[in-house]
Image 1 (tube, rainbow, N blue to C red):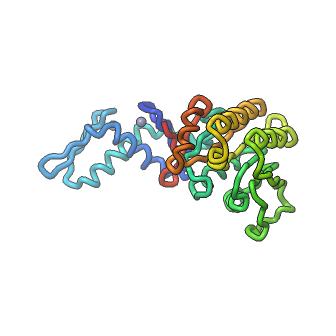
Image 2: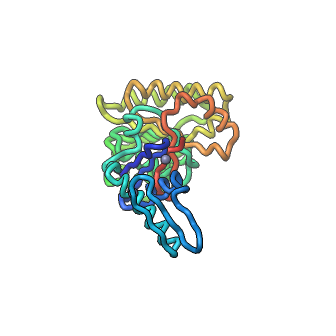
Image 3: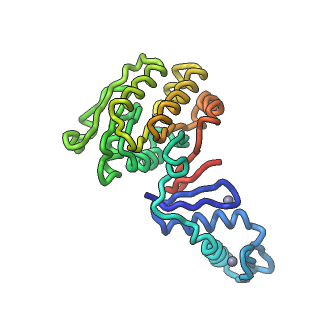
Length: 276
Ligand SMILES: [Zn+2]
Ligand SMILES: [Zn+2]
């Protein structure tokens, strides 16, 4: 679980794994909103709090800015929630766009955060060994059931330390010639066969770039909408791992999915942040 702070002036939300990191997040963010409360003249820097009557003037610029940030933080400190999860933002039911390359550390930080809080994990990934390693390193305990749908053959030599016997994991190899509709059907069947009533589902799609590259815009859009609708029945969070900067076609498809996507998050300096 993480700590959460939501700015009440804009749509910014930050989640930190270490609660003590939040002071830096809130202080910097509020300072950006109130930059005109800080002024510099005659070698001195002054700040005048927009929330209360406190004002300071000092020669030490860095020290004064740090003090102002800490002061701003104190005004919102009681609005920081502990024991939070990014998926709470969508009530554990919706589509989350994760702005991170699927095979990167930032994606691992978010996928382990989501999978850690679910009973059933279904992941469609071109790098199943990477996912298994990330889960094994980050999670105190594996989810009740994990089904990893891989577009390639699983290389057991790549994860020699992972004891599959002791974990409820199934690896399903996907025929790379399948259409998005067939991939969707496979995932739908997996949900039917594995989901227990009331259980949270974390569905990871890390093959979005491949789907966009192999098929037209219309079919890639339909694929995500179909999965979102299918998951809405079971209750769960679909995560789409995308790096829109790396592929203009992916950016185009995401534009069409604007209404389908409920939340957009990224990792910034180790913290999870909501992108507007
Ligand atoms: Zn704000
Ligand atoms: Zn104040």
